[in-house]
Image 1 (spheres, chains in turn yellow, green):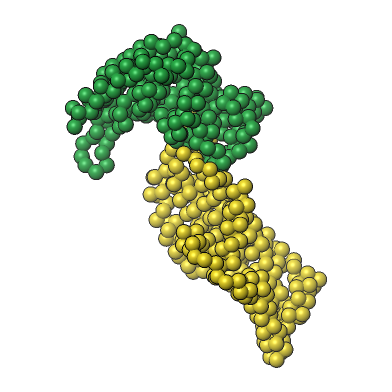
Image 2 (tube, each protein chain N blue to C red):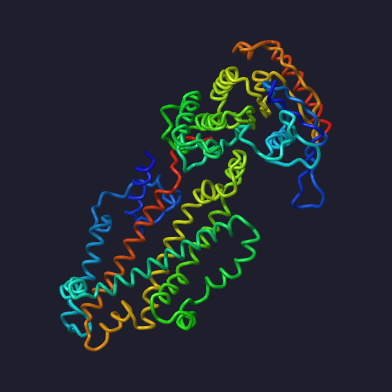
Length: 292
Length: 259
């Protein structure tokens, strides 16, 4: 019941100026103000507005492309055809190899980050020991580490996987640590009262309680992993990075270039949205009923 | 009778965060609770009754003295003692059923048997239609029934309850008191029940232990004269009113001394 209510509220905020599902504090809305006179404006309709603005951008793209020629900007039909070509002309093999490195690196990053973060959140001495490293590396430009990684691992699979790890690992560590650190004292005491063994404290109490934080960390880490994936290959001109670079140089194939970028972005957005949906599901169920 | 709790010369201080020195909460507490007794600890808030309850459970270690349950020294929490908390403390991501199963999981009870045992206690607290609900969807009274069911599910020989009905409204509290008595009368567990509500202590308990002062001492132990099963009429009896007044005067004299 509460779900649908929250949904209603969300859609309402969607329609507010600057809304787009952003979390608008309910308190900040003046509910008492009389409704504005019913003037059906296009500004009130999110979809009409989007159609107008995005459609406008697409039209501008198409016109610019037609005027300037494909050397600067491919037309929309050419780009769409490019997406098909990526698959029919075999370029997808490079893309799949790249995604494989992304998946390997990202899973290794999570396998390290979540336990490390949980231990940092749980034990003060682990936090004291690791937080200077984590915080320093977190703010370090990961790009500056690429030469070292190349020296250590060459330019093949493990180099690219390591770049993904280095990019992706910090958000999930920091978020998991914060989530575990702020688990309610009462819940910890309850688990102790029921004689929960230390290992099960993590799997049954700390991590479930911190789950929304952990998943948010995974989502942010994924964005970084995508970034690392592309940068790693652009640096050594291998795989998908090499394709991007090649399509942009003579003989230019900007149709394929844009197509590849669109595929990469679409993939990243899809995964991020799935993680976001997962995050929403993890929020504790509550209702308007008085609970105390 | 099994289930006897002995508190022997227990003392406990808490370190103050702001200043030097420590705050002595309990000092030289001796108490013997016979097996199968419903024992209520009453006293003003901050008198250390909840601390004493946690020491009995093993959640807090005493600075001095010890607690023995059936002659054995308590060194930590055990699933032989079920704990019910004032703020329910249910796991918000688990359904009612899964919350009740929490202790059983720690006992290593296999899944099928876990479900069966959890459903049995859920029925006992009248929540069989709500086993798929999450705590946030339930009222305070219902949440505390889940808290009680969770404690009962592990079939402990002791039930330790920390102001369990302190966060629910009056009517729900009276209903829960009656249900607790019905359940307890069938099981004859040893109950240690902390409350600041004198009337509640007298209505429920066989024994009312009055604590006051800082550090806290046990100043009175009253054997409650009402029979079992306890009749609802006890609530309105002159005898209860007289005992309530007696305990209140006892507590008030302490309050004035403390200033």
